[in-house]
Amino acid sequence: MNVLKGMSIDGPILFPLDEDLPFLARAMPRRERESANEIARSYGLKALESNLPISFIGTGKNLNVVIDNGLQRAADLLQMSVPDVMNRATILGGIEIGRSPGVARITFRAPTAALERVGLRGFAEEMYGSG
Image 1 (cartoon, rainbow, N blue to C red):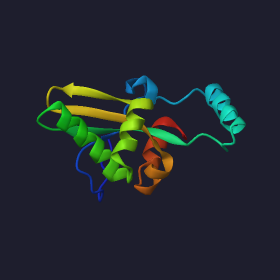
Image 2: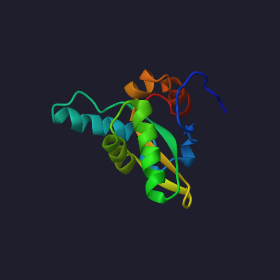
Image 3: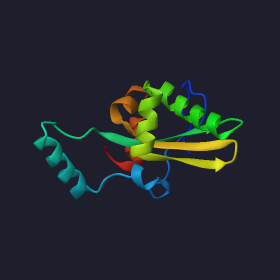
Image 4: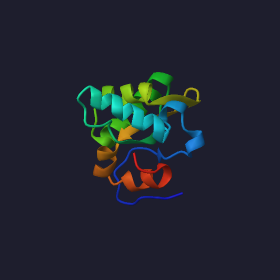
């Protein structure tokens, strides 16, 4: 376990083991990513977004508060909107209820640029490789 000093965060951040990640948050196999990049290029995109998994813990008195808290913690730290985090957790991750009603884990693939901005890219790449 690593503790980062000097970070202004409101709750725990996790980099789960790959096998503990929700299926959608796991890295795409190389062959699949190359195929997806090829399709993206056929539509005029240079490449897919570089992103890596991260989990935020939400806490509160009921499930709505818990989920909102986790989404807001992620949005605040990564300088993203709550709807963007919610969309990513839906499409590239998951929201897992840890203990009703008090805890949820919000996991998603965050843009590596956002992780870089807050000094977490190195930890994510150490766990999962480059995005």
